[in-house]
Amino acid sequence: MLDLDKIQALAEEISAATASTPEEVEALRIKYLSKKGSVSALFDDFKNVPNEQKREIGKKLNELKTIAQTKINDLKESFSAADTGATGIDLSREATSSVWGGSHPLSIVRNDIIEIFGRLGFTVSEGPEIEDDWHVFTALNFPPEHPARDMQDTFFINNNPDILLRTHTSSVQVRTMERQQPPIRSLFPGRVFRNEAISARAHCIFHQIEGLYVAENVSFADLKQTLLYFAKELFGPETQIRLRPSYFPFTEPSAEMDVSCSLCGGKGCSVCKGTGWLEILGCGMVDPAVLESNGIDSKKYSGFAFGMGVERIAMLRYQVKDIRLFFENDVRFLKQFQSVL
Ligand code: DAH
Image 1 (cartoon, rainbow, N blue to C red):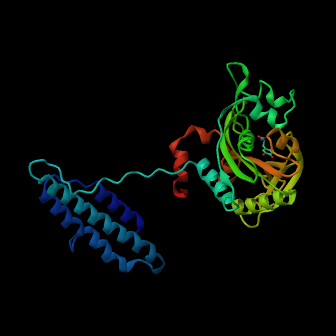
Image 2: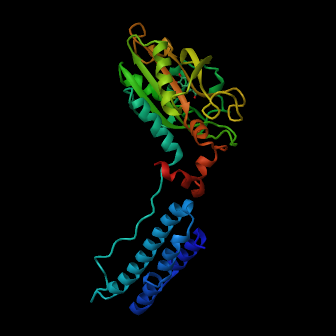
């Protein structure tokens, strides 16, 4: 009986075939592709294949024929190429095809987020990873004794309390406001650093995307509608959001946003720990004190800001259980994202 195994076995045999003379190539052609050849024999058997398998087996048979024809042509060509005169180089020969890489899952997620906010008019800019206290903490209204400044969280460079690796991309809000007057509508993607023990859930290096919108009459309703649009675009049209009151020194009021769990549709599952909700970002109205420290008139302008972790969203989207996988660059992990360039 003709079945997929048989076709597969013959395909493997043909792929492995070699020839050292043009005569041997011709012998292979006769063996596989002539009227009495083994590929043709399988085609003859095709009429006995049950109807419900015809589609699948027919497709594989055609693929097999192409494999055989390509093989014979390639072998033939290798001999005519050898016959190219003095240089021995066949300039007409096709280049060997190169292996395509894929985007890193974090790049895919970052680009999707940038694209969604791009549709709302958000531009993108970046700031330095090595920062000073002013841009990471002071200008963002962090009180002097705030625990985030602590040695435990922040990597200081050469023990200098004023040179540090940024702990969040909110520092780029400051860099933007100090050089640009409103309207500002920008996204700031980048790497951030925290002095934390590495585990399946936390890493000392990760990525954030920060958003800042400052203009006249910007309200909390604008923030909510912008984030609702974003959540539906990223996680699907059924997605709901919920804003829980929270605290950040640079926003007032502040909130954390949850999205309804896209895996269970909000019913409760192991990913959302039975709650139906997943926390994905922090946000709020820019504190007037922050606008003022950066030379923006808080009586004329208001704004909102938000910040999210790219790894967290990628873990939810692709069901990755261990954050370290994003940094190890094991090709067996990365290859799984090749089809989603
Ligand atoms: N910077 C905060 C963090 O790293 C996240 C954040 C919260 C950013 C609220 C914001 C915001 O812009 O408004 O945890």
